[in-house]
Length: 185
Image (cartoon, rainbow, N blue to C red):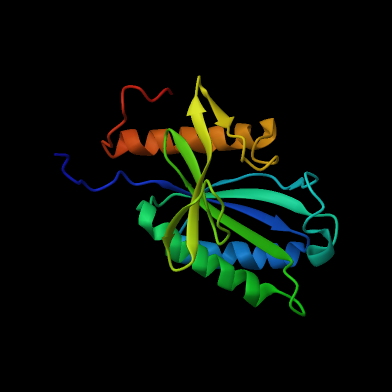
C-alpha cells in the first residue's frame, strides 16, 4: 500500500492577457501583494492566436508571463484562481475585462492551468475550479497535448516556460527538493 506524503512545492506562474497597460500594472501590483516577489516577467508580446477576447477586451491584446519566487503547494491553486478572478472583476470597466489572469503551476514534468471550465480532460479540484495538464516536459522541451491551447503550444510560450522551469529547477536544488532521476534538466 502506498503512503501519502506531502507534495514537493510547485512554481506559481500567471499568464496575463491585457489590452490596457494601466490595468495590467494594477493587476501586477495586486498579484505581487498576494503571492510575493516576481522572479520572472516576460516582455509583453502581442496576442494573436485567437480573436476570442477581442470584443470584450479590445485590440491589441498583449501577453505577459509572471512567475513568483515563493513556491506554493499545488492545492493552493484553487484559492489563487478564485482570487485572480476577483482581481479581473475589480479591474473590469463596465463589466468588460481589460485584464485576464490565467494562474497555473509548474512541476519539472508538467505545466498545469487552473480553469472554471469543465472538459473531458480536466479534473475537478474544489469550489468550481478544475485543473488541466496543459504541457508536459519530454526530450528537454515542453510538449503539447491535443487539447493544449494553440498559444501554449507555440514555440514562444514553450521557450518562456522553459526559462521559468530553469529557475524552478535551481530553486528545488537549493532547498534540497526531490528531483526525480527521470526528470530531464
